[in-house]
Amino acid sequence: MTKFELLKTSELEPGEMRKVEVGGRTLCVAHVEGHGYRAIDDRCTHEDESLSEGFLCDTNVECPAHSSRFSFLTGEVTGVPAWIPVKVYDLRVEGDTIYVAIDEPAAASA
Amino acid sequence: MDVAEQTPRCPVSRVKIDTLDAMQQVLRSKAVEENADVSADNYICPSALAEINVREFQQGNLAMSNGDLHRNRRRLLNMLVRPEQLVRFREDIILPSVDRWMSRSVRKNDDGVYACDLASVVELIFLEFAAKIIGIQGVESEEGMARLRACALPIFGGLSASHFADREAVTQAGIAAKQVFVDEFYRPSLEYTERQLERVAAGEISEEEVPLNLLQMIATRAHESYADEEVGVKEAILFFVATTGTSVQAVLSTVEYLLDWFEKHPEDRACIEDMEFISNALQETLRLRAPFVPYLTRLAVDDFEVGDVKLNAGDEVHAWVARAGRDAAVFGPDANEFNPRREVPEGVTRYGLAFATGPHQCLGLRAVLGNDGKSGSHLRLVQGLFRAGIRRDPSRTPELLPLKHSDDPRDQIPTYISFPVVLENWSVDA
Image (tube, rainbow over all chains, first blue to last red; front, side, top):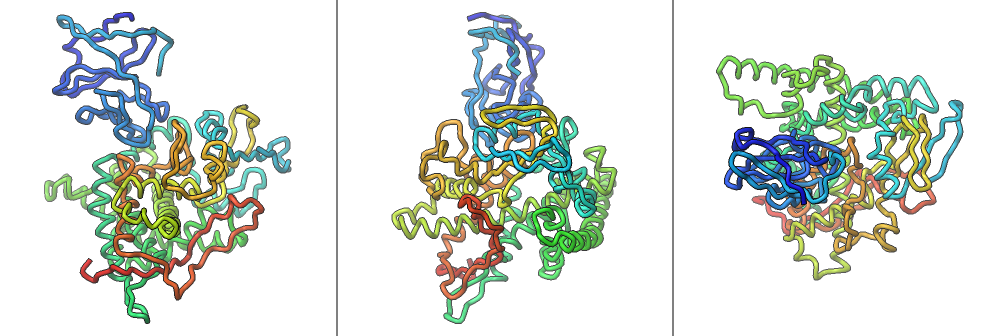
């Protein structure tokens, strides 16, 4: 497991999302109101689309192209047409920095 | 796969695909694209009539765009089927429309039983839905709807004339209907939308009074291509046709399959209150019959190989979707049978490739199934019909469009012209 610096907390206001490339992966990172900072794979499992370009709806992200929804809390599909969950990453806030733990740094995932 | 006729444009081939895995990979590949000439059968065998079909109905609409142009417009139009829109469609448009057209159509028959032609009623319901997702005005009255309805079949013919025997007559009727659609519906409705937007800008009405629909997007030039009226018209025609025909046949086929299922499995009748069961039934129907045309088309723009399917750049691709939906290697030895309790392998959708897949997956998927896969408008309509005690009218036989001959039983997909039913629990107050 490798720890990577992701963002400064000041870079992500509540209700905001952004795409971050780290450890050979592309993540969709969000500041989910009431649930803190969350991260999932940025690539929609339905089609080759960037989730961070979509909509943050409560605790879910909605894909901009086909409206598949995924939970930031569990990675589960919460809206069709996707049916395969997305990977959820463990985040930790230390001081003013958000870190992500990645088990196998790899080539870019999205 | 079979590589069919070599034609005047040798060495271009027409490649047929009919297995789920190969089709999934081909349709998701960047090696194939939508192409109006291929769709209109104007690619391998060019003709003046096919050229007209391309020019008048296909070229420039969403379905026939590719790459970033398609991606951008698709994202834009996806706004029409976001979760809150689906709820609005269901609650404010389709369910009231069901009440309106059912109450106008259901009458006591000679036996004193409430009856109707379900094909006709469901067509009216989805025509109204199509009109409202486009933004067309004046279709709630019987007169307005009759005029719009008269355009529907000829326009469908114009868009898909290559499937019909008398192509010239179908094309001419399609062009005439398109003119009526543009003059009597498209332009007046667009002008109405533009006036409404001017009133919003003037502070006379609120933004909520101009609902999100295709004409609102066209009026606000949500995409630069909408400055061209022909693009807007063809986009509206695509929505008009795509929203209506397949929805009507999907609902009728689901009713037909469920009536048979409940005869064999009367213990399942109570499941009509279970939306997951209804969703599974609709999805099974779609797997077996959608998209209610024999095949989808693509143009190979690059070489591509998957399994025993080999595409060369320039090949015309025919994806036989309903055959793939009956792929026994995926859905089991009873793949040709309707079974809402079917165990579907992990990673496979119950509806097969009924909505296609890849960048051109059908925009209507979410309207049909709903955001959670079991709350869509079509499902609620099917549930309402069974609550009303639907059964076949024993005194009248459904009419079907004559099928082209095929030795493959997987191609026997009925298209209903009429579907007479009685409604044993119907109440005029319902």
